[in-house]
Image (cartoon, rainbow, N blue to C red; front, side, top):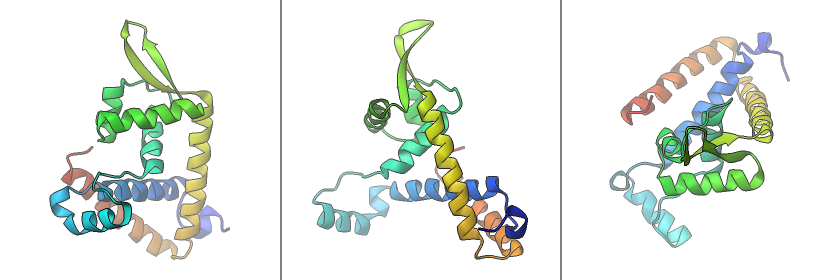
Length: 170
């Protein structure tokens, strides 16, 4: 693998590229049903149902990023932040708690409120994932010259921003 100077992209840029790509993949998978009739027909034929499907890995990654380093949102706040139904966010949180990456905590000011937090294991797993994404991003981008990488990353960032803005996301 080449070093950052030879590739023309930093580890942070490469990691951001992969994160943006995953986020776009998730957003594209959530196209409203009236704009995705053909896709839904294919899904129904292949999977035998018409319910919305989410890329579990992308959802979990986004949730963990929102919890890092020490954010502790309520389930409703987390659901809104990842733009998913509360039931889906709860199922994903249950999975993260079961594998030890997250924990549910009582709010110190109001014990009726439950907050979600990353465990130390979850923090380490997220950092490992980010390192992996940076390496994979650098490998993919190494096919381009430094100038092409800069152009591609600028254009890709604009596309990612346009998708976020079209959905009212930050």
